Structure formats: C-alpha cells, structure tokens
Amino acid sequence: MDMAEEREILDDFDRKILHALQYDFPIIPNPYGYIGSLLQAKEEVILKRVSWLYEQGYIRRLGVSIDSRRIGYVSTLVALKVVEGFVPAVTEVINSFAGVTHNYLREGEYNMWFTAIAPDQKSLEQILHTVREIQGVDVLLSLPAKRVFKVNVKFPLITR
Amino acid sequence: MTELECQMICELQKDLSIVPHPYAVVAERLKISEEQLLTGMNAMVGRGIIRKVGAVLRHRRVGFAANALCVWKVPLERVVEIGEMFASLTTVTHCYERETCPAWSYNLYTMIHATSRVVCEHQIEAMSLLSGISQFKIFYSTKELKKTSMRYFE
Image 1 (cartoon, chains in turn brown, blue):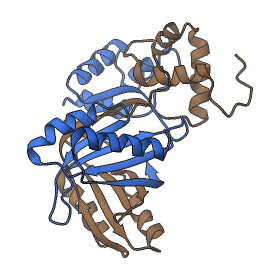
Image 2 (tube, helix red, strand yellow):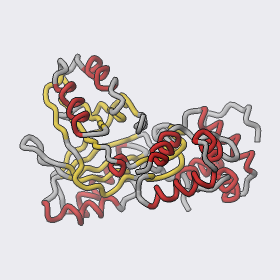
Image 3 (cartoon, helix red, strand yellow):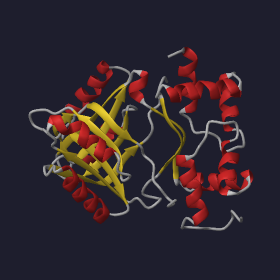
Image 4 (cartoon, chains in turn blue, orange):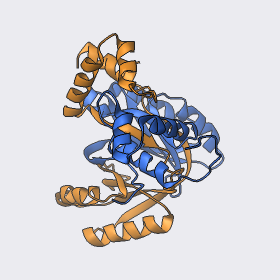
C-alpha cells in the first residue's frame, strides 16, 4: 500500500478500518494487530493507514470515552437565543470555558446550543451565570438530563 | 474512585499512540505495568466509567453531513417506552430525557446523524409515526463552533 499517494476519498479498506476502530477496538496489548487479524491485513499496514487517517483529520479522538456522570461530574445542555450580530462575541466567551465541549449554531428559535461539564454543581452554575450576563444573550435555558437512554456516537461505514 | 483510577483517566483521555503496543506507552507514563493498566481499564468498563474505547470520527468528513437535534413532547408515562424505541435506531446517536421549564416543555431529546437532511427528515417522520408523538421541533446544525473532549482531573 503506497501511503505517499494523495487521496481525497476514502477507499473500502479505509472504511473498514474506521469502522473497526469504532466498533472493535479491544483492550489487549496489541489492538492494531487484532484489527489487522479481523481485516486480514498485517499490523504494520493497519498502523500506517490509521496514522494517515488520523493525520487527515478523519479521526477526532483515539482513546477512551468517559461517562462524566459516573465519575461525579455534572453536566447540562444549554439552549440560547442570541441576538443576531452578537453571535461571534457570545461564541468567544462560551468557547473559552474548558467545560464547554460542544457548541453549535442551529436553525430555529433557539439558535445556539452548547453542553457544559463541571466537577460540581457550583462550578456549573458559575458558567451559566457568566453566560446569562453576556451582551446579546436574550434567553438561556439549562436543560440537564434526567435519564440517559443512549450515547453511542458511532458511524457505521460498512454493511455487514 | 481510587487515586490510580483518576490518574489512569488523566492519561487515557490523551490520544492513544498509533504503535504496536499503545497501552504499554500509557502504562509507562503511569509507572505501572501494561497488565495492571488493562485490568484497571476492564474494571472501569465494567462499572460504566469508560463508555467505550476506540476512535471518535469527524462525522462530516466521513459522510454524515447532516446533524439534527430533534426534541419531542412526550407524556411522562410514555417517556421510557419511547426513549427506548428511539434509542434503538442506528441514526440516533444520543437520546436523553431532560428537565423542562415553564418556557420549554419538550422533554425527550434525540440527536440524529445522517448523510443528508432528507434522510434526517425521513427518519424523524418515521419516529413520529412509530411513537405517535406529533409535537416535535427540529434544530439542524448550521455551524460547529466548538467540539472537543472533556479533560477530567486536570
């Protein structure tokens, strides 16, 4: 496999690897070797491809995902009505919080939605208080979870 | 959680190296054996602290270009039934019951990722038909302003 080639589009093998990296990544000493055995490829071929996929930005994270609630952290989803024209300034303040992990502009009456995570309720309230006071923030709804039915951010890339 | 578990999470939330023995690299930083780390990780998977191990993709780059937050107004006595129904769908990546307030009475939240808006819309129509819930709102994302992973115990 020539990794020097410039490719814009994922080929079937890339898709199989990305799929396996999401669904079949094991907790064993040689996870890439295991993925190689699933795809009938050598470990070194897998390592090269994964490096390439990582460098090209297809992979945002490669590691563990933690359930913040299970380790005592608190979180909420926040919906905002931000006045047009103030979006860039509001975004800058909100994104500056380490506990804000996701922030999206969305179409609709509430146009900005972000998630905030904090080690305790007091720190979370502080973030919300600061955001409420930003010029251009018209309405703020904090919508903490009561029950989690699913968190599974995996994208099937092959059909089995 | 033990001190060692906090330290493990601290190191594991950094990206794994793309080398033959990535966990050995993490174990070395923690000054423990690879076997100790793997045992600790399995225990944390068992307790639900580690939700998954592997890759998180940039969904737009791999073809899942549309992302809709769809919120539903579900009678309280049907929340569990419908929450589980929606959660069983592959295109639904997140499904939560959330608190309401006087200004906002939508209580069930689903995040739908699909290849296009049309696919999202069909999925949401199907969800409405399946559940019988007709009161819902769709919020399509138009711009990702921030997307990172939380860093714990830092």
